[in-house]
Length: 308
Ligand SMILES: [Zn+2]
Image 1: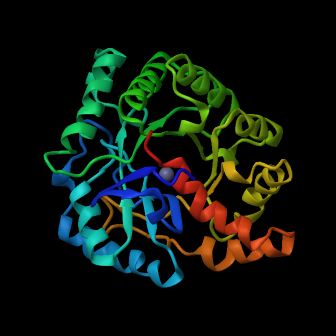
Image 2: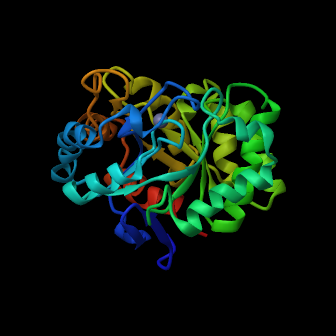
């Protein structure tokens, strides 16, 4: 890790080595109603904070220092809630700029060009998000399986422009090697190196050779659906990457949570602890060294979310 590197959290910029043990892909709140209808009128901030605080408070005693919230705008990204929960629990929380995929894209994304879209994301970096002084720590995007349709080629291009302007890393909800290769090509065409990209939900790609090839290009491979019953699905690509000497490209997380807007009272939540209490201890049985595990959970997230 570059000792000079910096990371942006919802409570301000920190040195990358301060990030510590990190869950690199989780959610505190999500609203799946769609871009046209979502908004702060759909939830009560105090209720969200009260509901989610106990789940987050479980993490510091387990040694977790930081938490990356991957909910993008138009899916109920609410940075005032994230900042409040960070202050209450002591967890460092990272949020994002960028947009998801239809039906979670606003009409303006279909109407505008990539430069114009990027300008609004870059403005969140320079001016803060939603009138606050909270700034994004990465750029979230999303695609479907297969080749990219025009609107998603446009959002990925906007992400590339934003990454160039800000130094932020791009993460894409992807789970498909074909789409991953197309995204890397767009990013590289705009001068964004593969090491500035996170292949989110890579465990959903069954071709593990393709995952290794994408890691070799330099991208981060995020195996992020870890929970009770999904160990095997994550273990196979993980061991393949470790055998290939690519442990420095791996990110592990639950993609868990979350307060479900529109469900009372906030829907069914899943905890953020299985990875720490069950999955990581299991790795020793497969001969994975403690130092490797620590590097995956500490060094890799710091490298992935470093600015620049
Ligand atoms: Zn997610």
